[in-house]
Length: 145
Image (cartoon, rainbow, N blue to C red; front, side, top):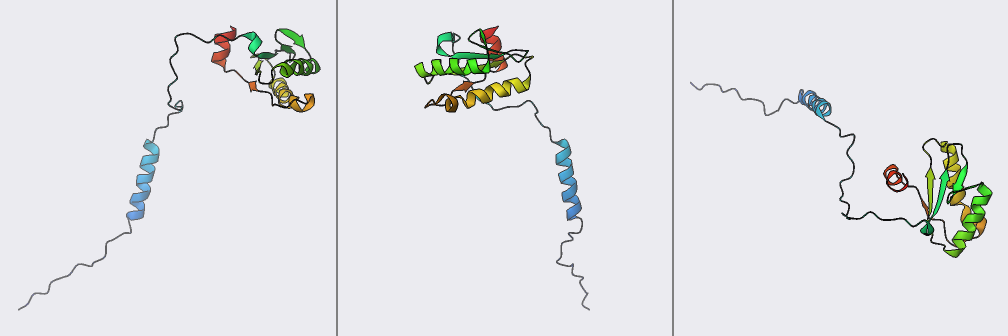
């Protein structure tokens, strides 16, 4: 007598596959760690001496705590700043302008001064744009403190 063999279905049960995939996604999301203070990895060249900044090489524009302006250690107005810039940039059009706001200076005063420097070539009819530099806190502490 021949025995009847029971053949298994050729189907793979996939009803729980979605549940397993969802649980894996939840597991990996919950165990993922974020590095909040991680930045770009790059190496800076090691120079033994710190560079010196010659005040003649640049124009220093400072925004003080009371929103007043000072250019190259002299108090000025926005109109005075424009005329001073025109005079200096006609001598050397590639001279950079360093915009240094005080820590207590209103943000709006710094933005207004930046915009004034940005549109200065149009108002003064200069051929080249003004090179505006905003120093970082560490640069400010290193060179001006």
